[in-house]
Image 1 (cartoon, helix red, strand yellow):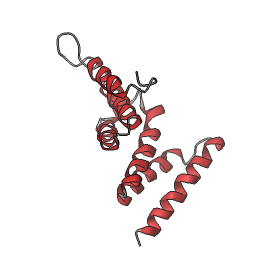
Image 2: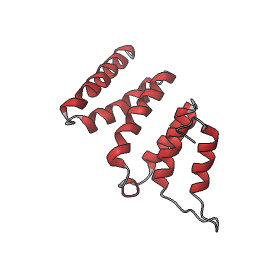
Image 3: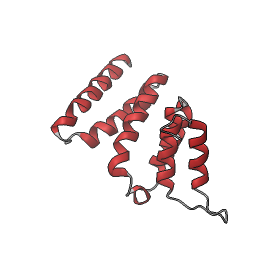
Length: 129
């Protein structure tokens, strides 16, 4: 549903997948929060994307251990972008900084992304006076 841009259905299905037949939680909360972040972001619902990305980060690292290797940098960078778009410089810088710290030793082919984010951090800091 998400790939087919049926965002409401994707969100509903993600929520449904987190509940077992007996009503108990059934899934990995980190997977759910990351999936919901992606779905709300793709649907253009930035406030909801921020809520779910923040919920992902609020989970204990142990609960995210199967996800962080591919999701953590994406979540930090996307939160930076979402806050940046809202004009919230402090939070944009906070999450951009977290992304840069995580990727500071990334492979050479990924360094252009790090450089771009560093430039944006510098611009935001300059705007703040």
